[in-house]
Length: 561
Image (cartoon, rainbow, N blue to C red; front, top):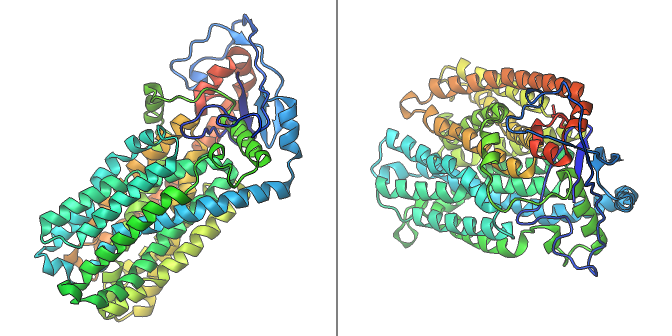
């Protein structure tokens, strides 16, 4: 059983976690069977001018060719081996029916993942709110120790993202894995409210990084499975919308919870950790029951025709019914680790992480430096994040509308550059020029939050097949989140309120990110042009399985710009 699909703009492989073939898990009474064509006839190939270097593959040594079937044009993909009956069913599925199916998926998948991501960011960033409520003084910490506390979270967070996504693929139900992670970090967050010294706080931050590491790459992988490439960015943007809103909710919640100062003999900042940690545990338990997994496990809310459509969509975009690997292939890890474009994509996330975490950890202190009281400083940190949430969704919708990623990385970088240029020009006069300073803060976060959605989608759209995509997504997050360590040390207490290091590095990240975005798109254009010249020759020289195994390095794979 072999099949291979190539889209006009890109080839996006995907398979359901823990499964193999599209109809796996259904009986004949539940789901109409698929009919995938396969050819076992091979012919000897004449010597060709195409070489391994042309297709960027170092370990492909074919000694035969497959006489492949004619391609079927379907949904912007050229599909080999799909039975005409299945193609007719897919093509006859109306736009209204498709919208209905994806609305069902949207309602059950996106809000739950967005809510989990919201609480995830609240739990890692509420330490900035606790700081201005007296946490540093109560624990006898210095300014440098506080920066160390912020950065230590990212050490396990960065190191464990790739292993976590590899582990995720072993779970038949991803919801179980993500739910367990959520419960664990919720317990850790609750315990943070009970720490008595610097060492205790260090320990809880390390544990928080361990358990939060697997959530985001797992959520992105789950979304890339359910949705077509052109629809992915806007769905991912809702996560970043939630990330932005976490800054708003964190400030509002902290302002209210801090009023509990003295209740049960505990300081207000302790109640911030205790209550928000308990809420996380409850949400993690709910994840076991509310988060969806795969169409094969969704018979309660999808009818057989809808399941058939979704699994055909998966079959088409993944490149056919190849057996999904149940064990990690070192070849896939090697191919991803040697893909230089993944590291370039990761630079966008590094910039965004440094910008967002540096701002999120310090914004309450920045607004306090504008002359606001503790409570008002918490409250005024909320509106910028509401604006950021709106910008994340708007940019993502436009990006999906045009199926073009580069401008929606570059334009936010321009906004960031302008915003931090204004902040530096104020020369620390934040209170005297409160209006201008607050405008620059709002402008900065408007630029920061759309970056990650566009970059994550750009990366996911350009890695194939799904086994490598899972690793590539995690690797991008792993490298990119090193920016969180940088962001933890950007804003130094001794530089308050000028924050030359923080504002200066933010300006540098915006400027360099803009340049890198243009260079990366240029490299994709060059690669596409080279592949176009050898595509037909490659189809004659390599078998379908070999082309599939090349993944995004296949000459028939077209990169998304």
